[in-house]
Length: 282
Ligand code: GUN
Image 1 (spheres, rainbow, N blue to C red):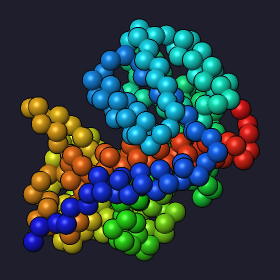
Image 2: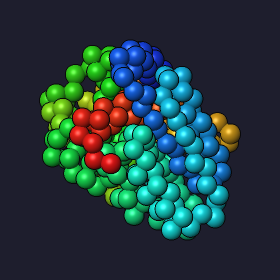
Image 3: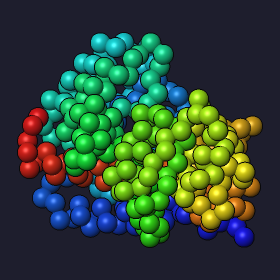
Image 4: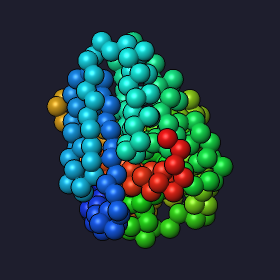
């Protein structure tokens, strides 16, 4: 048996078509700003991919590519300027930042109404309270993949490995919101292998290439791979390829969860644009 591959490309294209149709009905063009500091090759590639999809859909975009040596004050000043721009709907600060910069105050400075990454503490609080809000793109993409392939979440045991603010924690909130039983595991979890084997839905978001081995997967489980590492020039996920022989469904790497992160950012930008125009707050 080999797992059915859950194509993020397929789901992202379906979402893009839905967004294009929705955009055509809007009396305005949503606008998204990208802020990138430095020239980290992965960040350059991610922002380029996000910008490409935004432009293909017909969104307006602007790119602020700041030098590696940007100061905290300079970055905060740019965020204040973007917050104050009435025609701008979304601000995406690509992470990670160079070491001299502290991302926390910058993320907190982004207007929550323009926070298309869903990283502002107010949006995080709304997410955990079950209120409608802008939700982090990668975990939102996981849910979207499962929904697209009609794989039920309610009542299932979702084990998430990795407790980052970007993926693990918001994924836990989203799965809980969909009535899964959630276990949030991490590097200090005892008995991780046995715990992972209990998962109906296993999310690997640790950032360690090939970490999830077949012995950690219940036969017939759904495995969602969020990891991306470069090993000897090759891209690898957090899930070892041999897991395909045990899982029933598996996201491939590349072409799995990655394209969904980009597509969900567009979903968030449209949502932010519409919400801001309903309740203007800056
Ligand atoms: N870096 C890695 N993932 C992400 C993400 O989802 N958003 C941003 N802004 N930066 C990232």
